[in-house]
Image (cartoon, rainbow, N blue to C red; front, side):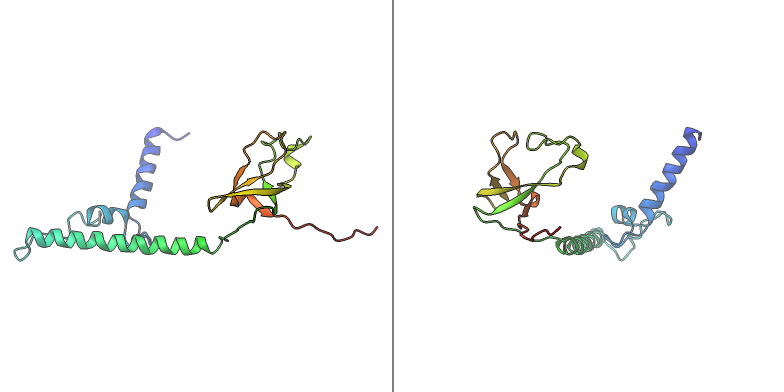
Length: 168
């Protein structure tokens, strides 16, 4: 077992590494973004020289902050574009049949299975009775179910009946 002092030293080193490594989202290290200088140099790179006034120094720090905000906005937009590639807009009409995605081991009031771990992922089909807002739908659930009948669109899947005949 490692002594607590060794753990503290290792955590300190990990924290130093994280705060001084380059982050692509902000375009510099978190330490440099916060303080305006690199920790290994030990001095502020924006210094008051005879030609620089305090307002020039403040202006330079404000420009750095503006650059950081722009860099973060670019990183945020890049992540949003990547996330939007996997999204799809779904809409259902009133009267349409849908399947409902539930946690099978937690929803025993809708359908009770002897081995809930092996039960179906989607339940139904159920009829859409009302559209509530842009992303919520009310379903016609059985009266014996003890769950609220309004669900987010991400929990619904269109029901496509399979009329393929089975031959033995």
